[in-house]
Amino acid sequence: MMEAAQQEKIVSVINEKFEGEIIQSGVIKDFFTLIVKKDKVIDLIHHLYRHPDTKFQFLTTLCGIHYPDQNQIAVMYQLHNLVSNQRIRLKIFLSADNPSVKTLTPVFAAANWMERETYDFFGVNFEGHPNLKRILNVDEMLIFPLRKEYPLEDQSREDKNDLMFGR
Image (cartoon, rainbow, N blue to C red; front, side, top):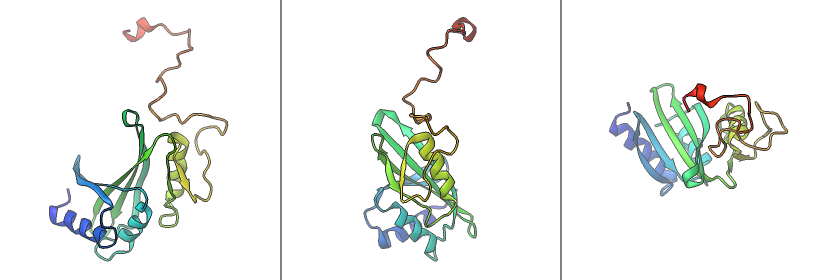
C-alpha cells in the first residue's frame, strides 16, 4: 500500500495544474483512489505520465462500472509507475443516459482495445477514438450487456425448471 506522503505528493502534482479537479481521494481496498472531474481527466493523466515525480507511464486497466441507482457509469483508469512500483486508480462518473469522455489513446495506445471493450459492454462513447466499434459482441446488438439494467437470465426460456435451482 502507498504511504501517506506518497499520496500527498501525487495530489500536489495534480494540483499544480489541475487545482479543484479532485472530487475525492483515499485508500479503497488497499488502492489509492482519486475521483476526479471528467472534463480534464485525459490532460490530468497525461500530466501524471510526464511529470518527473509521478511518471505513471503504464496503463494497467481501463474499464466501466455501472451504478444503476445513481444512473451513472464510472470509467476507471489504473496507472502504474514501473520504476517506483506505485499504482493509482482514477475514476470519473458519467451520466448513464449519454456516457461520453475523450479518448485516452493519444497518451496510451493500449487504451484503444480497453476503450472498445468498455464501449461494447457499457456504451461509453470515447470521443476521438480511432476505431470505436464493438469488439466482442455482434455489431447488431442494441444493448450494452454489462449494464445492470438487464435480467441475468433469459426470461423467455421455458425449458428450465426453477425447482432445480432452489427457487
